[in-house]
Image 1 (spheres, rainbow, N blue to C red):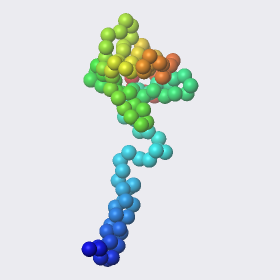
Image 2 (image 1 turned 90 degrees about the vertical axis):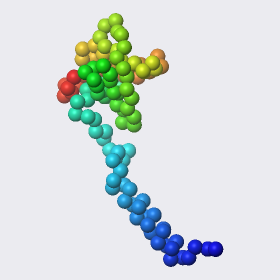
Image 3 (image 1 turned 120 degrees about the horizontal axis):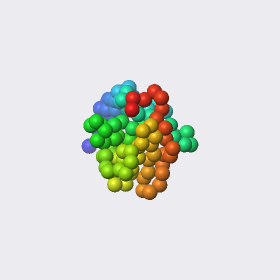
Image 4 (image 1 turned 180 degrees about the vertical axis):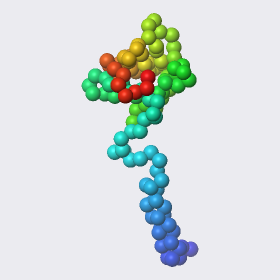
Length: 120
C-alpha cells in the first residue's frame, strides 16, 4: 500500500527543518573554526611553525595533548631528567620551558619552547 502524498510531504518538510537546525546547535563548530583551548593549557611553539598544546592534569601526574581533531592522555613515567609522559606509543618530554613529542619512535614536535602567554 503506497504512503499518501500529504504524509510524505510532511515527513520530508520535517526532515529538512531538522537538518537545517542541526548546524545551529552543533557544539564543535565547523572545520574552519580556530580551536578553543582550555584557559589552563600550555602552548609550545615548535620547529616548522608547529604549535603543541598540552593541558597538565592532576598536579602534573598526567598530560592531555590536544590536536584540533583529537585529544589524548599521557601519564607521567620515570625520566632521567625533566618530566616524561607516555601511553606506550606517544611520549612527551619536558624540561623547564622546553618540550618535544615523539610517536612511534619519530619526533612529531621538535625544539618546542613554552609560549609567553601560557600558564605553565
